[in-house]
Image (cartoon, rainbow, N blue to C red; front, side, top):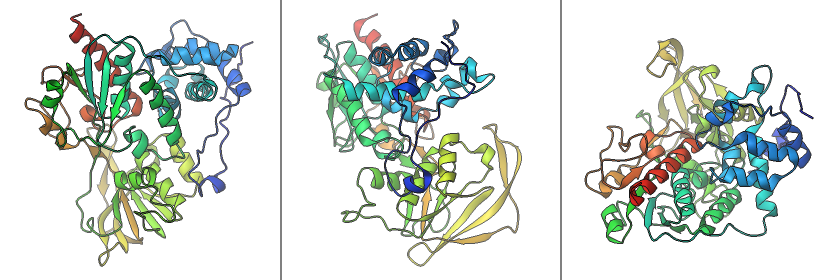
Length: 458
């Protein structure tokens, strides 16, 4: 019988007063009963609008139908036909602006909890699987992938499933890209990322870490080693700063550095070889998901945290769920506020801000913040984290001749990822600038299809 309840089954989660003191996952996941009940809210629409909202075209009604029947492994097999990282996507995809935004149930109530069901199915598979997927027979062709982040992993998985010998070259010592260094454990546990990557390794994907393309190796060397095509999925890991006085003081971090030290280096732990200063009052500048991650991570190190954003709550680009979690955990918000200097003698002691007001929309379509003259004020703090965006590392552009880039550093690529360099494709944040995990995965999957066509002469 269909479940016509207007609201989703609630996601069990840690209580705010407990979770703000640990790095364990906040959302605890559906039970089998909750998953089946939520799946029965799906109307199995003939037009399947939810699928059109998914960048990797997961067959959503089909997998949900399997969940409703209690065939969770069958549901996983359907998802994994098009999605290489379902446990990741179920946790960090902005479903509310993609698949769930198209759900017919959302017209008169809440949409089906597609992301929650995807997470449940992937977790069920990981807990109950008895063997890894078998690698297909090799087709005799080799492809190199630069970067073990979402786009690179997606491209590699799609090509490996077609029989290609795929090698990923990763600059860090741990694969996963932003999934490993940028997203905290309380949102995306490292063991989940590692388990998904192990599935790709089982398909035959080889991952070589600590190799910086453009420094350790060049793209031309990859071709000399017999790789017939190269996909660049190196992400956008170069942090941006505001270029205001005081940004060179001690205890001013980019969000990338702060989160990398938290996630990969355990710098918040007692006895860490590279410890973070345990701040009393941290100010985070920005309003996106990265800013929320940085603020919530700083809170877990014991700091009182204030997030400064130059527009209002309505314009926050972060996911609604992440903002709600931040508020529940005691993060303070200073809206219509922008820093103009960071102050201190060698290290951070305060930050000077000014109040803003909104005027006509800018080129992004959002109301433009304008300074209110004479509104300057100081906030005491001993740590500042800049979370105002990132850009691609310019090192990748020097890795080969003939690779066109945008003025802001992104690689020039067409809609299927083809670059100006013959047999070189690119996708994800390296092309678009910082975006979502699933959009990067979609770009990697599309590029894999085009690489296959080019090599096989289709």
